[in-house]
Image (tube, rainbow, N blue to C red):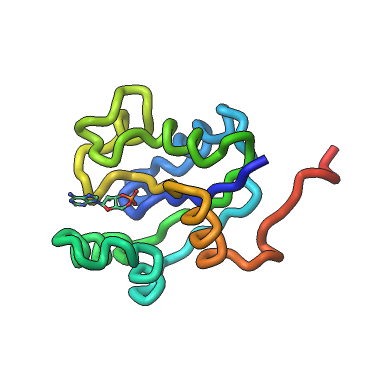
Length: 143
Ligand code: CMP
């Protein structure tokens, strides 16, 4: 069983897409084991996107991701990292296939609706940045 970090970005929240996006993750069979609505600080945004520090789009990315509430998620399931990336679609929503979240709902590279961890290392790092261990729950005792 694998865990990944996903985020519904400010454009997804503002456009009222939270339930549509959660539905896609849940319908695929992923479990939501942690979830919070939050506003990301500039410090946290810089940590989250540290590997893009030298890219020309970095300032715009930080401005956008801190501009309003986001939904932070930990999703669990077989091969969760790859499954979420497939459900999200390509980074550029104009190139993303129809049927993916970005392909169906997005049009801009910055405002691309969702984020998903790109590797096991990123998933571990991002989950730790956004959640404490006690915020990540287990379904084992659910009926
Ligand atoms: P995300 O999956 O959150 O990871 C890094 C983000 O940088 C990416 O989604 C895009 O929103 C953004 N991004 C990547 N490439 C570009 C680009 N060429 N121009 C603007 N934003 C970009």
